[in-house]
Amino acid sequence: MLTPIGPGIPDAFHAVLKSIHDAIRDLQTPAEPKPVFVVTQAKLPPAASYAASFVLVSDLNILAHSDGTHWIREDTGAVIV
Image 1 (cartoon, rainbow, N blue to C red):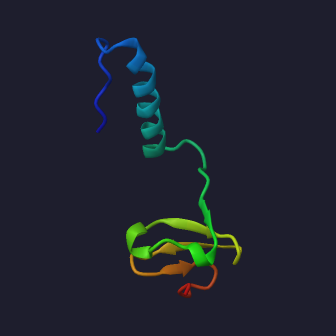
Image 2 (cartoon, rainbow, N blue to C red):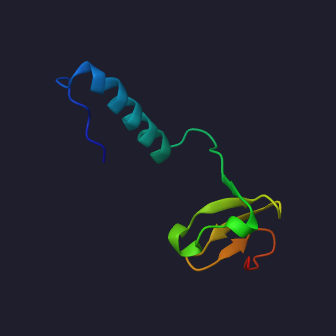
């Protein structure tokens, strides 16, 4: 849960904190599709660090998700090595 920004903060901080607050709210409750992280197979980050996340593997032209251990191709279900 986000804490509302108080009215007593300096004006210089209000705009910045409001933009951060709005960006977090938009990520928590998206109203439209959001871009997927694009990466090549050679630069895939560790799957364990991104469980339940999606990427577009650009050189394979496929979506993949992390099962917490491996990156899994969405087209065949195979592990990307």
